[in-house]
Length: 424
Image (cartoon, rainbow, N blue to C red; front, top):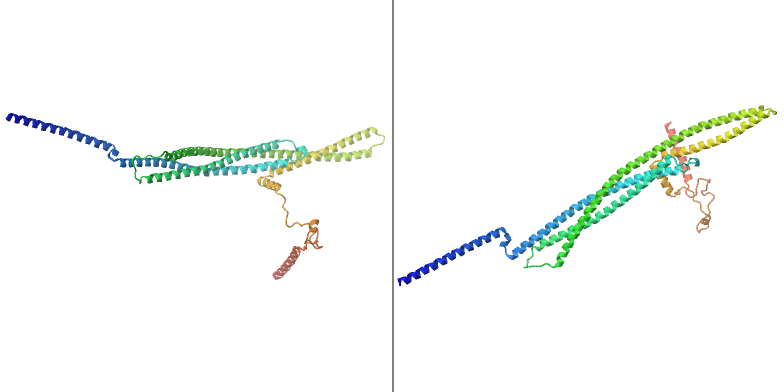
């Protein structure tokens, strides 16, 4: 009995120890697993959240990531808009510079054209192609080519301004759409999140399309800004180059004009001297021949033949004198025309062009001559003998201005007489 009890006690004790050992091991494993879970939760904060909170946090992160992307694009668009505004102002300034250069070239072209028109009126003997004609033609061709280049640059600048305005509208609209999407996405965070929400495919299409449009718009904007920089550079270089070449052509024309005037002046002076000598020689020869003919003996045939030969020589000298006189007149006319060309400036050239283009304006003070058809019209009466007519009296029936003038003149004379008496 005691032996059975001892066996039962040892069995009971062993069983109790085994259970305690198993309980300690399970407790140790459980605590280790819990510590591992805490460590993982500490490393991953989302692991400790429930599914709804986790999805809401993921959505919040996704929304704010999209908002950051939207904001980056908006910032880039704003920077592009500011660059486009500066580009538009500078392009307008470039167009203004091109317009001023075009007007300066037009003024020089009008001067050159008027000089060519004046020189075309020279006498026929002076209508040869001299150094001044070549200089004027070269200046004219240069100004025409510069005008075409300036017009092309001006048209390109206007096209750039139009494209800048279009790009500003697109960038502003794109930024507005992105701000609306940002506001909509942030507002959606306040809504309840349902489990496993799947967005339809149609919802992603506008965003991808907006992303592609934004990318293409920004690329086009950068290309447009590069075009603006190139146009600005070409404008500055062209303005400086055209100005220098135009001034050089103008200086060359003025130098050739001065040289041509000097040549004509010297030639005219020589012709005047020669003409005076010819006139003096002809006058002297006429007197001496007349005296010799009076002294000529009727029987002296040899002397008579010699005098006839001298007379023919005198006649040829007269014809030569006429040619020299005509040449002198032509040189004088050409010199006067070149001096007129030298006095031509931009104001005179513009005035001459306006006079050429505008029809003559009829003055109000001109006499209105009525035709015979006007006399036959109803309500018209024949002109009275005292009416205004060419060479007639100044006392017109239409207004009596001549009579009023006479009355005022007599009153003025009386007033002067009274003032003279008061002074005395």
